[in-house]
Length: 67
Image (cartoon, rainbow, N blue to C red; front, side, top):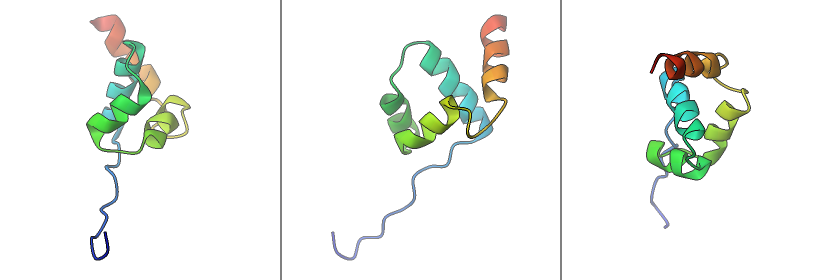
């Protein structure tokens, strides 16, 4: 691995966070959600613990009710 540059994982956007909530409520595992975004599972957990993208849960809940 010497000489290979590691790129940082994808940074979730607010819209991504809304999608995370919807997928989580549909029963998907956090690690699978993270893999689909090419990000660290800790970033998904930060959304679900409401440490990042505060308000995304509410927006997701409204989308879920509207569907």
